[in-house]
Image (cartoon, rainbow, N blue to C red; front, side, top):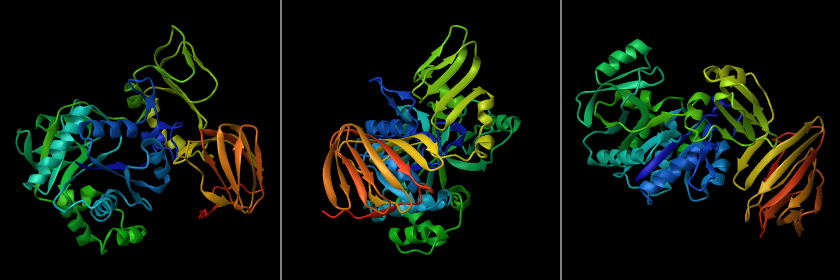
Length: 438
């Protein structure tokens, strides 16, 4: 099974846990059998591999998410990196070219495309496998998954199938309706369009060549910023006469808001929090190292992170995005391919960060022109390289780097350090990367 997972957006409806580099799919809120927590992308990836251990999984995403994906899924997962946002058709075209030219997937093999963040059970991935098998038959150029609606939703488009068979030709598509119109669609046997579909690889590759002038994956990647923003639905689906839909009646939830996300939590609180007996229907997610105490609250969501604190009525939490759009702030937490960092203090001429490096990983070899840095190792063992000179470090060691010098640190064991940046102009753009000589 070849699966492309579309991973986009900053998930501002889940502020303060989500930000421009930590989208909602990377928030760890689902408790596993071992008692640990996993994110949406970890859960979906695990479920795919449970159903098909040999599945080729490729994540189509922006470059800002690559480090978080490697941090949570490891280095083996395929990633089709979008140099910039150009909507779903260019993203799927690029991912399809990546599968063909980089991964070596044959043109007659089927590809399944779906969002990275649905809340589903294993039967959903069995259905994805069946979707790919149906596309491989060649009876239609596109095979869509139609989700049996559980209520007249205004959030989704609708697919009207021609028959009531498990697999049917598509009669027509309907845009997102109001509630009353949705009821009439459902009465006609309509299905939710969850953005899940399958095709033979050459079909989308040929469509891409029809609409975009390029030779191969590398050429398409280089031209990506010049491409017109257009959705896959508008560019392909609405113009394709040979489309089938397969019904899916299992559990399927779009966890795009705090209200829907907290419904999927297996327990009311995550992190250091206390609810007294008078609280009712209250959820708390606390990522801070201080306790959150709730008393007498009803139908409330509380979320605390280094980015900020949200206290909201459950229903009102769905309307947070316009408020967050007006907030400009420093990224306070991020997961990287080598570990993670958390900002501790921000001052006019200094920035203090707690850095965690995973064993066997290191930072890029880099320099800064407008700031000095100090590393204070607080736990673990590793190796520091400053201007080509290498030395071991352990808890209690302090390393000072002047502006302009090249430096990196690698972890032998899990390594934690406090990084203090000092300068009149501290910016994420003040960083130059270098190759580290062997």
